[in-house]
Length: 297
Image (cartoon, rainbow, N blue to C red; front, top):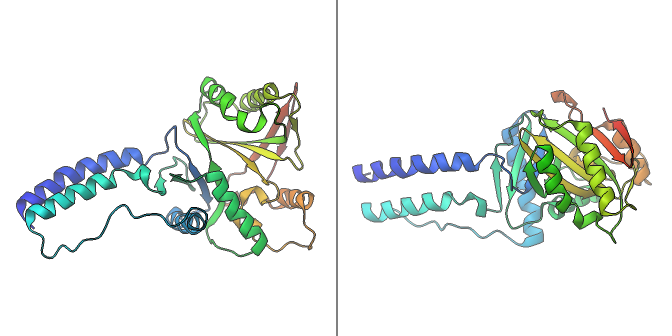
């Protein structure tokens, strides 16, 4: 390799690395899938890519490769340099890939950023298939939570964002029973009780007929805060699919007539499967002037 090519690789490669590292952190504006595991984040990431790609190909068709592989044997130094620069520039456009892993900012949590797919539709499709077939397709992944929106994890920012975000599901004439599921990691910017009360207030303003249901809600508002980023989604079948736990949803039911109510009971019995790392999700739901809290351990 010529000295010119080496110097160019160092110059452009170093610059690309700095850009890429910043782009690989969970940031406001991202959409994707929050994946939890008990240790072995590398294996978790690999499984997530494989699983998401399998079902995304079925829903949206195979992803088109952004780069073509050319033979380099007969290339001269100038042609090799141009190709090197082109590949670096293409690699910097990670947001155009269907899936890309970013640093979530929390232990045992992987964030897979999505582009050109609906994370809620995709993950629900995965859970639905696992629930029906009872096939285990992962070893270390625990839960896969779609993230349809993100904002800064400060009260004023969250209220402003959610007042618009929640309209899609709760604005009159739409109405639904719901619960609010809250979890914060490595963050002390937002108080749980204050967030729950504020979100419930927003849902009530959109339509007073929206009602709380802790047992079998039609919709579950998921709020996951990691450091200074608030990840939000509104999910259906959250209880039926064991809080989107891939391990639990693939288990054979104790009886053949397992429905939403039985699923709720089993969810409370099994928890969210994240005990090994010392965490336990809390489900907090509030409406009107009162607040109801149900801790799942």
